[in-house]
Length: 335
Ligand code: ADP
Ligand code: MG
Image 1: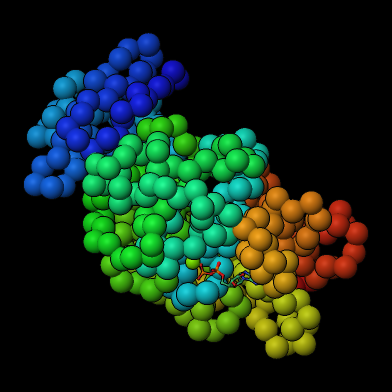
Image 2: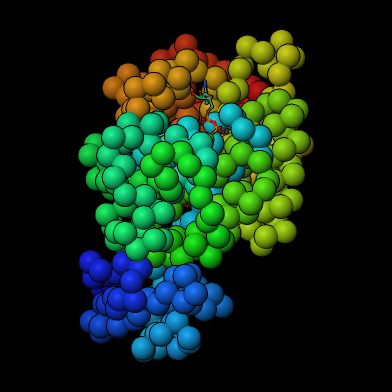
């Protein structure tokens, strides 16, 4: 499929944009109606075909062609501090390094810190709020990572202020990002289950629930799983973070399998408790970029490969001190 999007694509003044598909140029218009920016609607009944409806949004031409096939995945948890942002940064970087175009959306508006984890905090010039207010184009607000050009970050605010963002705002932004040709859009969700959570999940079709093997985090994860289902998100996977094999062996911590069975959600991966995670956070360098191979880095890479469907085995967290390549064995045998 030949798809290009013109540069003025997501300028929120009533500007037209062109999309080239199958050697045909389609011209559409974005309009601001009652201060809310409207975007073309996509008929989701057939995922391979889409029809841009003629509507009050000012769409000039109907078309049927391949939908931009982005996978929109929200990384969520309910409980705060369990590793959502860490997971978003590391999974995003891993998938980008494999060769896919990945956009990370920091939907934790009040406590933005995805930019810090990625070491991009000084490069946030424009944010999603500027895009929504018509101050800049979407491509200007998408910050490209210099270490991996396939990875971009969209922050919501520059100075950690809370803004009134609507579900429609989020959905429009994510649709627009997918039209820019991104294969994966990972949304870093805020903690809690209030309006920020609802906004963050609304554009997503898939979810990764992050939990630690603690009863409070598991209960929140269960609650979130129910809410995702209530919002028609059925493709949900589990990532168990901060696993301590030594504590599991002493029966002081639930095993990954027990956590998975309690929640009844398919397991995507398990990440060990590792001080390198904190070091990498402070350096603004995701673990998966580290020159030194760490078990948590390998675990994130494996999780990313499973997320994109390239791997179906788990690494063994019970052998952290063995040769790194020995770690790439089946994971759950011993846990
Ligand atoms: P959330 O986004 O869910 O609030 P964060 O990703 O910000 O959580 O992580 C919270 C804290 O936990 C951070 O200080 C992070 O460095 C630390 N952390 C996350 N995962 C691990 C891990 N596997 N091992 C050690 N520390 C971790
Ligand atoms: Mg966070």
